[in-house]
Image (cartoon, rainbow, N blue to C red):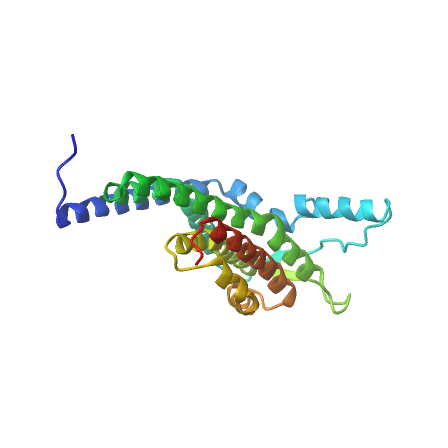
Length: 263
């Protein structure tokens, strides 16, 4: 037995209830992250430690390539400093909110899907589930790539770069966290490229042949986009962001071709 169709105001009331539940979930997760300050910042500040996983992996690879000789990697000697009276507290709030949104995101997605699912047919609902799950997984992969590769390499390169040994490297906590959070969010969104291209391909709005034909133009556009979304202005970070974007575009061509919607 199917339920009676809802009118506009009933839909609006249901949407309001869903939004309230989302806000409550984000608040609870953010408060929990705020309370676990030590664990939160152990996670966020790990890439500035010499024994971080990525740096140990690089040391192992360098030692293997050089047959056990000195790797030649510069030691990571960067001091984080705070320059504002309230900056640490505000950054604590910002980091807790960011982690709270990430922690609550599965529930938020569930509420959104629960709201729109009644308007979909069974086949559309099945397709929507696959797209949502794919999008969530790709966003998570973007976050992991940033945390374990892009940001550590950027931080190590820029943090150890010196024009003179007389100039010590110090980085503000605000600069460190804002770069990490902004890069993570940007790369999470960028990793949705294959999912978006898949949707456009299914609707016949995008074709693999067209994507291949305009590949060079897209690469230039990706360079410009990478320059916009990267918090730093150095060429090293630009290339670290651009290369995954280009690889995602190549994957997107294969994804669109698999939809069999090409003309």
